[in-house]
Image: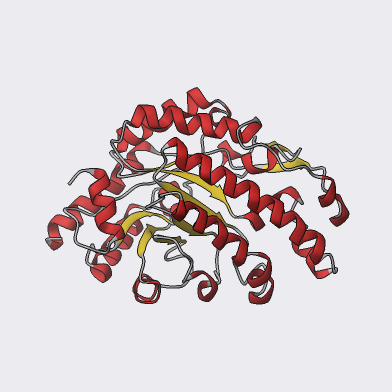
Length: 334
């Protein structure tokens, strides 16, 4: 099988010639330059012989064209990007924002990044573009005050903002698919019981998320992946999203892999705790890969970390992931 055939077979929950795998990280600084990030992403893909490419888009790109500014200085030390300025300081400020043109500004930069990467990849492997759920983008723009705005009674303004952000996100998805991507990786960072409730996410999150996935499906996306970020995820709300695959922080939080397989009926993407890769815990990595293969039988599964691999990166440990996978497959005759 080639890489595309392998991924399509896994998505169909059929037997592959070998277990497909991939991983991704951040490339701070480089991810603001489409030429540089596309080249480095392709080199990263080739170095580790990944089966698909999850684009390593800038983590704050969906906020920039709304007037926000971010600080990326802590990423190389294992931290995360932080918004340092937003024009939305209160719920009433949402009405002042204008809907951006996805072919200009930061959105346009990311589309250029995609086009350049697709030229380099030349159909060697599927490429999926990182999208943030509308509620995630709105929360970033509000500097993590969105839920406070909702509980203080500003739901109407929040819905108005989410409608505009969803329209923008859907326009971006259309442009991404037109450019030639195979699908989207949509990250929701608020669908967690540690953060909010079923009722709030059911009203302010899920309906908008579903619209984004429906747009991707309608535009020909065949590898659309939901990433449920964080612990204590709202599995009951997320399990029936119209995506082809489901990714979450396996072994860091429930559900377990067999439960997720049986209930979602989807291809599962995950299997390794990302911090075990960052911390070089080879025994833990080996055990997690073994457990996934044992429980899933190498069917309907794409091996990845549960989330982005944090810095510092160790190339020897990254190479070990593939070595361990292949060794276990051979031992278990998968």
